[in-house]
Image 1: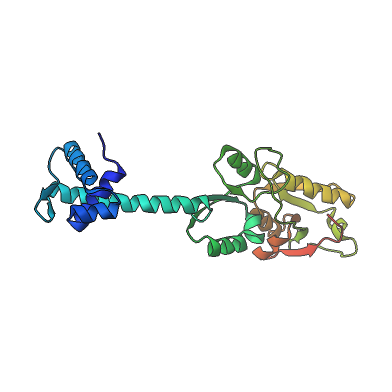
Image 2: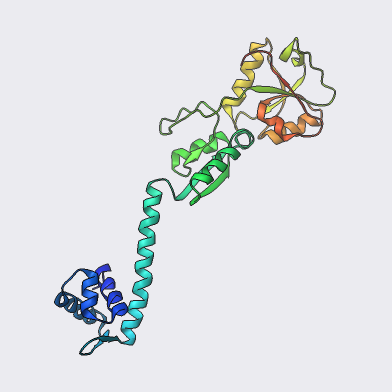
Length: 263
């Protein structure tokens, strides 16, 4: 039969007081009840834990080792309960967060800084993932929070809108822009756009913005992230529609223009 926490409390109290009466008072039990518990522990251990004297007690080697391990166990138990309570209040534990490059540019740094100030004991695990990957991971329980592009149709996922971001036009060297024509001024240019497999909502939104300006873009290249898109734009391979926060990347040869039409 194994020992329980009350057994360890009893042995630790005796080790620290070396006196049955004082140990019993600390434990809020009677002295006979404490003596009975010690005898039961000794039966389970298979040997004496204490050398009883007229006024006090001394620990045997087995008693000393059991008390030492008991102290450690009780400290760990107390710490575990405390951290579990903090986790239940959202003040500790592990938070798994999915993100894409757009959220890193537009939102995530400030969110993480503020979260750290309020919850310094929470461990953050960050994963760079596309929107479809995040949605799948959230549905499977492998992520706690994901910063994704809407819409998300999976009913298992709770969605909260945290940012509305307009699109801008990314232009490479020598690409003309007419503010009066707006997006129509690049209607004949080759377009580089985020792959639909990476973000169907962004892909569809970009095409709808072009349609609202009266044209269907000639897509010559798809890419999986904003850095790749802007690199291709900077190399002169085409123009692109990107989130306004992409301008923070400041790649050589790339300029950005605001759209004049509502999106």
